[in-house]
Length: 408
Image 1 (cartoon, rainbow, N blue to C red):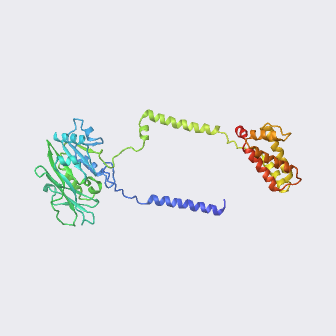
Image 2 (cartoon, rainbow, N blue to C red; image 1 turned 30 degrees about the horizontal axis):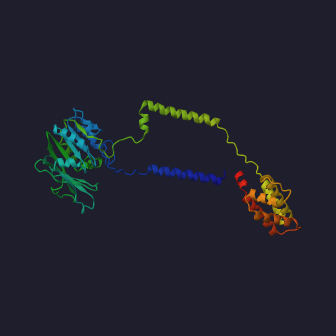
Image 3 (cartoon, one colour; image 1 turned 135 degrees about the vertical axis):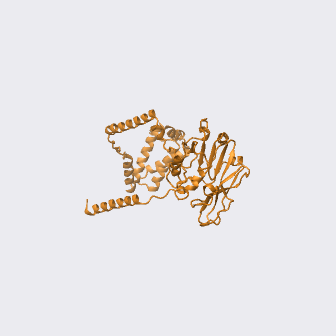
């Protein structure tokens, strides 16, 4: 390799290495995906909340099954906690949840989008917060209970649309929290935008919040926002078990690879491994036994036609029209003898009639052809026009031969 080529290779390797180093040292982009998953440490995950919840509650259970299935266990009692961007229970599932609550349990649901039947059951309605003058997309939330800091508001600045309860059943519903657009430090909030409510249902109670972001890492790690989340938890009985739903989560864990089924079933796993081993053995032995490709040898061309065409062109170009006409007539008579099975030893009226009948030509065309042959035979020299006319009449004569067509 030349010196110049080595320099190019070194420069290419150095460039690739530099790109790899830059990519490795590039700061990782923040993932703002609203997962609400308990195992996610991204801003909108809830790892911090789940970790702190285990410290203040006697018993915490993570539920990764639908409530309709999980509540079939009669020993489930306490608080069932849901939080996500949107939660939509089915009809049967919601009925099972409401029946469970009426037996003395607590249901907590924090979402921007609620089950319509749940709102109708509690005589509630939600509406988006007016944000026309909220150019910085900032909000503030607060709790109304004076015992847990009613004079404090908490700032939040990572949301596009917030909702509040614009209709409540004032006889049954208790207001827990408020929400409003942020108007700066030391500004009071209007008591009209309700974000969190509590309502008795049977022997239990239901707590609904339009601010699920209160449980996210991003909100809780901005001090003193953790006090707002702690204030919400003060409305549930921490001495009883708390069941945290992970089924209704935007970022819930699920297996996307079909290989999970194979590798987690022992019989299928060994079948998969055996297929891989068999394929490897086949490749090794088949590769050794594989024969080199046999080259294709093209057969020699039949150049008889080309040779004949070349000789005919030589005769034609040299002006030997008489000789060519003799050959044409000779081959034509041989054609009559071999194909039409007529003797050509005597050309007379009877021969012409029989030949016309067998070749499917008219008697007049046959007579014209043989008159031309006779006239050319009596001449010592003929022109190329006469030769071409002879060839044309012979070819036309052969084209009417039905016996020839059937035979081919």
